[in-house]
Length: 213
Image (cartoon, rainbow, N blue to C red; front, top):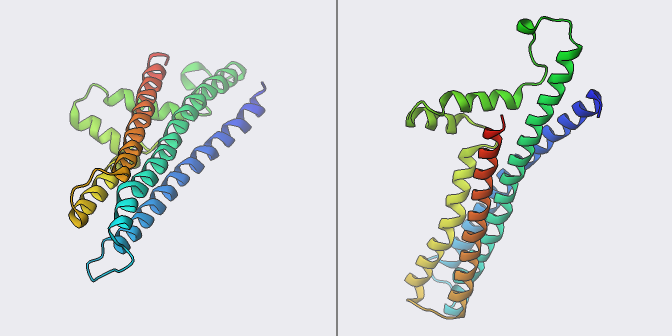
């Protein structure tokens, strides 16, 4: 693979990361908007003949948790996709810089890498890894690839929405354990399982990258 082809691939991967982050933001925005509208229509207090007890149970106990689980899995998949792209971009930077360094006539102590984006992020991570809780928190707030703020917000939103929906339903129609409750609980459990798998995969990927730097 030539340097030119690696640079083309590098640019395409950077664009793909930006696309993933935009898709994450769009998915989260659409989800919150849709769920907000459903909540407003389903649990409004000024009288609603359409939303009888069965409708409230089917939507609040099953449909909303199902949508939350589906969107949550898609969102987490985008996070893991970014992590994998990040790792490959780091390797590309290593290859390109190694080739260009061998072709350069500049002295080693004066040579500056041509591609340094992922290396810079990893260097920031290394510098604060042993600097205490406040420094690690600062890293999390500044680390934009992938943006851990959106990552944490997404985890909380997709996990809390079903719980809030169940609470509102039980306030409206009382405690019930029918088929809608079972299906909603299954959706929630599936989301927790897939979310755990993705989080573990992300942690392992990061640890592997750190050990191979």
